[in-house]
Length: 342
Image (cartoon, rainbow, N blue to C red; front, side, top):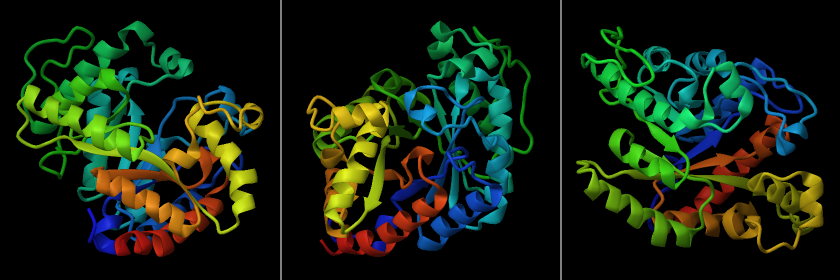
């Protein structure tokens, strides 16, 4: 809402850190990025997970299948930072829920209560083949996993086997530091019910302010009522931040790459469809351009009612973390103060 301070806005902003990329990021470069995000005042670091590096169109552009195992990275980031929350986005159906629940409980203890669990259904075939998952079972596995997480984190006895896994008698010690370990759910409409039953926030990709105000928030309020929630579901959203005063650079360099990223197509295809209005348009959805332009889009998202924004500053790893630090720094020091002043 208008009238927020810089600090209040930063508490709603989180940043992506990628354990992959064309440059094969080192542990030192990833720690540097996380520490810089903390120094700038962002609320959380989000790290996505795969068993293997995808081979799909946009990932193939990396030219490498380098992947630093996020399961190893997360506790390192937790120990090398002091305040910033550590959010891990993982494909829940791929492992027994006890494994994930124990991991997050341990991570929460290692970070002194800063862990956030972000289960997703997943989409990459090799994640399912390594995890021995039939794709037709993803939904059932997700529901059972999320229910099991809550039972284990709450210290509640599990007395019956599930349809997929037998968690009877399992328990976790130590339990999470946080009384309720936050859980966000990424996905589409089919994920809304499980979000309302077990999670704390719904997490879609780059909605417009009108979609936030007129579609997503009314839907979440309806789910609050349907499931008798005592605390309202929060709305988080993925977005991109890319700041430059050079209009030609934004138009010629940034826009086609962002068009490719948010539509899951190759850079080459994006160039041929640069004016295609049937695609998700970066200029309508993303926080890009001059600091003033990005601040206006940020203000519009906040005024629409979004609770959290998770920002990608380096094109999902197409660029290196130094590129990300440059744009993240400009966003925090230039864009956020302008948004606070609106």
